[in-house]
Length: 560
Image (cartoon, rainbow, N blue to C red; front, side):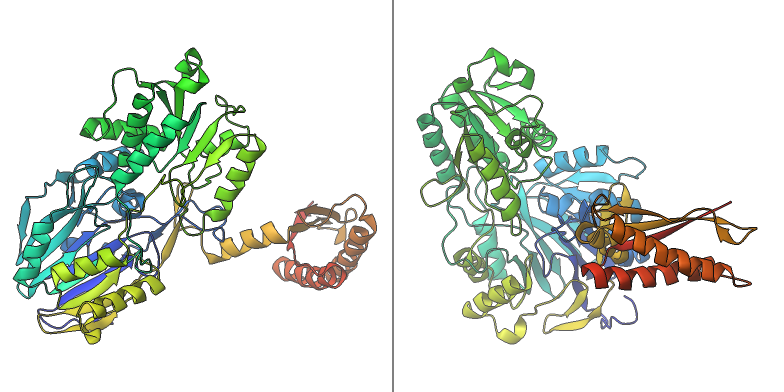
């Protein structure tokens, strides 16, 4: 641990590089007996403020500095906010082994195959009954229910007592896949759990989260009532939902065509692992769609969150090469909006209505989706079963963590035994104490194209100015020998003012710059950098006085 982290001898360190105060980039670290255990390595999808950014990952600097102590990366399940950061982590940090289970193994292998020039460690596939022994630490697993198969909580048995990391979960008594191992949860509670870290995403919701199997019945009923072609959008990672859509299609005699690379990849992984089962001939290629009538087809697409380049968005705006909507089509959103995504989803829905198609979204009348995260009653049941001495709420925005703390106190955990942390905060744990023990470096790192971390706040600020205020550039050609301008300055405007019709404004600004530059050139010596800044200062004030706007100003010097 660095100097600002004061773990005492024998104390366990627990912290997050991502996942606290946010829903995404889940990356948790446990330091036990001078060994580092990493749980998950996720990404965060950017909001509208992060212009042009593809993903956000944690700062891995601490792991890089301490990589010789890393035992392995343990994956709870295969969602992007838990595995999406793995390729970027492996580029920077040597990980001796990745431990994952079931469908997560396939999804990680697909992901790593897309990235070149990284050293891929051995991927150890664990089962629910496996255990691994390290120096003073035994690790075992508890199967839980979520919106993707093979979701496992992780148990660290230490000399101070057991630590349980739930991962993402909900209580589902009639799941589509295997049941959760409630007996193991109860046994861990009887044993005496020292520390629980639990998913807080739906801590504010009081209503019970409905079973995944109920959604399957609702989808079957919808498919039997819809006469025309069905276009249905869902998360590519929700394999249970994809299987339900396939079964509903078979029930109503429809062929299924798949659009969207992530959806195709998920179905391939699901078929390999046995979670996606379709009768021969049910899934057809996009090229074979024209062989069947519209009412006998179902099109399964990505884009349930209004992503601009996803299949559904391109179908809605008419830019999809193969699919054009027709009157009588029904589009079903088998998902709920991720926080912050409502606007792009509404835009897609409006475009679909303009195309004169029927649109069905999840709501009180039609159950087309259910959350994979437990609400307050589920979280209280987990707390009651585990009976932890100490508690750290994780995976959620700050208000969610606070709500989860209140639930824990309701369930009998003393308020002083609950620690709410931010990314980078280190908790020091013994059998008797849980305390704040300092901080490690934790920040957001931006992925832009193939670049990692080369986009900083200054670049984002410039992008924001360009998007809101536009660009004003003045080009000056200077004769170095004669110390004069070869011709009048050329003005270029992009996203600021329309040049045609504003000649008087641009000419007056060009003249101001010309007089300034000629004055500077008459001096014995001038600094080009200083002159550029003087031009920027002059134009910034003049333009604001005239237009009340502050475009990005770029002077360009050409020398002859």
